[in-house]
Image (cartoon, rainbow, N blue to C red; front, side):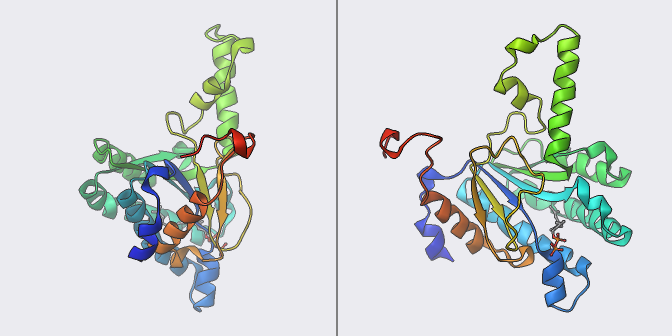
Length: 249
Ligand code: FPP
């Protein structure tokens, strides 16, 4: 474990890592257990990944915990997921504070059950003073929702004469997104072997390196995060330029 970590170049860390945590259900099936057991087991992976990211000095870690499409799952599973989220958030506040980690959330939070909203709000307030890393939970999130929301708020400002449509730029748009103020993720990880984006951070991942691993989320550990970061560090990020134009060092 320490060997892999030692290989990481701390001068070239992604500032923001986003994760699509996938494969809880398949992991549970493999173990002959109900799907909800997979989600419960995923909490350990959340803890390990958060701890590893903070220890390394990552500034933002965004986890896709519940998508707007997840409401279509059987009611029992949705309720269990919501309960698990509330319970986990409540339980982990102490650890977040001990580790100086701030909690934040992106998504259509007003549509979450009242209990979830309250637990989330409280945890966000209780950790607001922490500044080592921000853990962002994407809850009832979808990128198309976020983009539509941004379009509506900008349209209203144009309508009100506060903005000029012809002068709108990328910064105005980025500032209307839920991720306002956060750097775009340089690295996006998806577990469980699926190679889709599934409506996650579409604007923000324009230049992200994408990393896919067959590991199911409940099995994801610190070493798996280190491997993803090492893979990222071994790629050349060109942003449309050719190799020779990149300043070395
Ligand atoms: C995807 O696996 C996982 C989810 C939809 C939920 C993730 C939630 C947790 C790990 C619970 C705790 C999280 C936090 C942040 C407190 P899947 O159900 O889509 O798996 P499958 O594709 O194998 O069916």
